[in-house]
Amino acid sequence: MNNFQKLIDIMAKLRSEQGCAWDKVQTHETLKPYLIEESYEVIEAIDEKDPAKLKEELGDLLMQVVFHSQVAKDSGHFDINDVIEKISSKMVSRHPHVFGDAKFDTPDEVKKQWHDRKKEEGKFRDSALEGVPKELPSLLRAHRLQSRAAKVGFNWEKVEDVFEKLDEELQEFKEAVANRDTKEIEGEIGDIIFVLVNISRFVGVNAEEALRKSTSKFVSRFRYIEIKAAEAGRKLEDMTLEEMDVLWDEAKTTEPGHKV
Image (cartoon, rainbow, N blue to C red; front, side, top):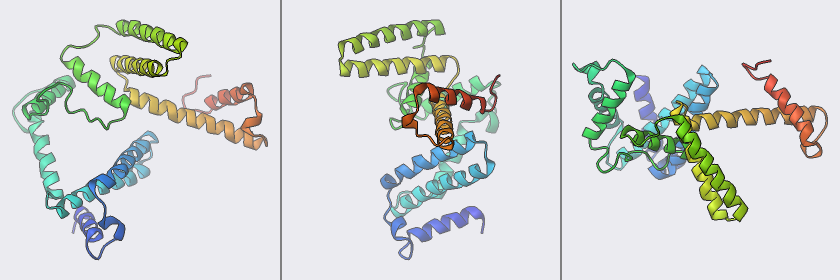
């Protein structure tokens, strides 16, 4: 028995009458949070460049795929073999330059034909924006939607034009703050973030990734402040902002790639 079949059999046992009380009652809906969590733990392992952790987290993510497939099998819809067959057929169909006689020499050519194949499959029946999941993180969804619109020509000509739009949105935000209009403030902040995503996309940066890395950097630097304060026998609440800023700057010097 190969390892993959072993995993399938384990999942089937867990879902059986003689299996686990928790596993037996799970549905696609109840499993959604775990699927999301495991996906982000894979990303975290990649960011940490930890092969051992990545191996473990990929296993956890694979378990979610097998779990959902077993739930579907128990409902009489499909099983893991159907899932594998579907993705295998799709990969062959969308790579005619590998499994057929088509010729695409650049990554851009490959991406274009991939998009064309999806259109042929009926993925974009009514709108170029179809197929971008609403459940994606907002920054990533904005990036994907803007990219889709750009493919059909709805795009800025140069990044400087987007800078002008950002200046415009910042001015509107300041006016909303001056007016103390909470609903308007919320709308303008959303517009600013959306434009920033557009700028990120324009210069080849994924805003979701950029913010996630900056957030991790913030956590690391803030933890440094907490640790140093504790070593000095002090509480953050009793420190001045200036004192914390000194430790913040110290934290920067401990980071890989820091420039003196």
